Image 1 (cartoon, rainbow, N blue to C red):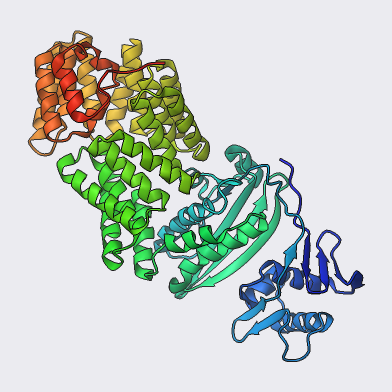
Image 2 (image 1 turned 90 degrees about the horizontal axis):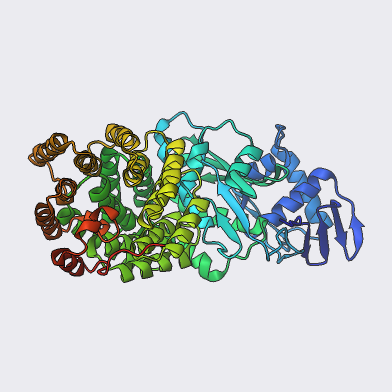
Length: 584
């Protein structure tokens, strides 16, 4: 990619050439010592914001302990050479007790980016340098939110690697070059946070991957009340360094993204931390944090979106009752969209509800497309659009959407596992096996990847491999009904009728203690050839709004029922794809 350094600044009568390290006044060179020159350049690059004295000293003397007097002398020299008289603030304003701000208008030379090309950036996990492990949620949350904010700066020219993929590099020993190569990123942001009492010092570096050159660094001293402002400042600073335009509309959107309530923001970050651990216990804690955040700020769209996503995932991954979770997810998604419709997370949450609970797939597609128009770097929207389009029989579009999701989040097991689902729905079982295997390479204990592998092997007639994959999926799924019932279906197809009946007994026993999706019972009866029983259980599934109903229009296991009028009537009632699957 052709990149050029940002190397010139013009203000008043002055011109800075950073390549030649020279300051010109009306074309004549102005003599400056190296450290005075560096001080000027740093202030100009940070123009418009207050640069603290500690930050400025660390930037100019990064490896040396110096007295504040050295900085004062540099500032005094600059005022003299820039022609400022005592008490004048033509270029450098002193902010008492805080630092300095460069206030003159600045024009930059041609930027570092050929805007006909697209730059890819990754925000590496913030490193928690404090001794308090309780700060871990804050480091994780800042990583995610910084990625999200940067993804909305200039989507046409800046692509941000997904927030989940970068987690793989937490506490990594890999080099910048290795990480950049694995993520196919042009720039990396390395950051750390250190707690000093109630204050936080956040240090960020922008590194160009191709030559590992650090092209910018800054430190932010922040109290909890100013963390929200930190993200806005950081996004603007990085946009400036990569020479992207942060339009007023997008700047305002970034300002609306987060709450102004500090405690609500803290709870949201905690909720994200728990939700990303993907266990029933941590999902429960996440919903508690999100709910408390919305109580503090009823207009907090991101917290409502987090609630909606957690409620929507529960019936799919944890067999929670959809008649309970559906209304909760629907209400939370409505609040999210009402609070901030121009938010990728809000629209994606709405799409989830429309797909899994309402069975209104056209509305779901509209929501996912809207999410991607707001933030094209949001992998979740691309992933869900791929799943939806596959179920609608639009397989080429589905493959393109899920491929983009993998590009944005290449190191996340679920991206590959659900790519297997997209391939499975199009009846490309060999590709489904390949994607499922890749998911298992990324995370050997990821039960959805193992389940997808077993599902594909069933269709390929590889029964032993299918049983092995499903047995392993069962070990890590926490008793998910999809794994149990597919084993029962496979036993039945292999003629192991007693084993299949034992699976039905097992599901019946489980149902005495908790909700079991009727779809699970229907699938085992389908394998046994008991089509009347299978249809009876599917009707029960419809009555309780079982989310697994969305699988039957496209799952090849249900092909024997497609000529049955009861099956067609059920699909029509669900507003699912009524005419059967399309393959390509």
